[in-house]
Length: 303
Image (spheres, one colour):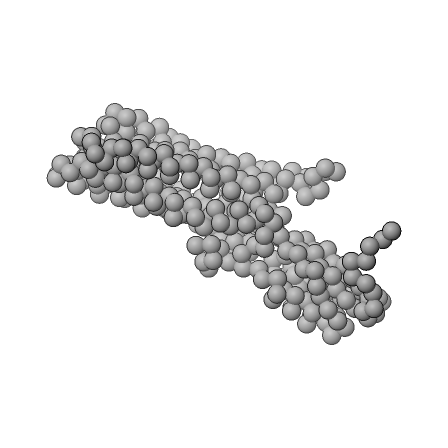
């Protein structure tokens, strides 16, 4: 998933923050209400499938709250101590969301394995109805994030989680119907384990991407070697480009530093403008270029 086509476009264009704010509010409200109903029903019916799905949905509510908070922090103006503002918080939130989901996986798997030997008798029909409501709510929430899912890592995570939740709720519905008509109550902990696996698979790509960005790795879809060639070929007066560093300031903004060797200092401003336009077109918005003469010593230490 980390190298999928979706990941390659994670940093393309900026999401519509007004639309996202409404989407987060609707998503949080609907899912929090459903979590309360599903968890209470799971306790009443002694259904591990419902309780584990409620736990998963609650972790998604937390993820939505954190993601919305991160987008609020992005708007905070830079200061003397935080010269980029709090834009990096979007990366940290995506990493935290992935960790929360991994904890949920561990809890669900533990409970499911314990109940495999003594599956409880549950009311399959009631489970099916509650899961049906979950399909509608999760699918609607996923639709809310569909527009901006290619533009930001947190939005992508929210969309994938809600889409996975829709499939999980469908699985719970089917298991409820089967338990109602066959009495095979072992399905309940089995569905709990399936839910855990689905969460794990949907989280793997998010964890990989967010961990890489938190370590200032090169964002997905951007290749330093290719960028270096593009910069060097952008103007015939450029002799060499080296010491290229590319990292993410946030889940939507990237930065680059590089050394550029040119023979004529008078062409510096023209070449700098050309290179910055080229980089901006490739979704690198913040650029710092250090220009050097061919006979200069790169990295010379000043005493």
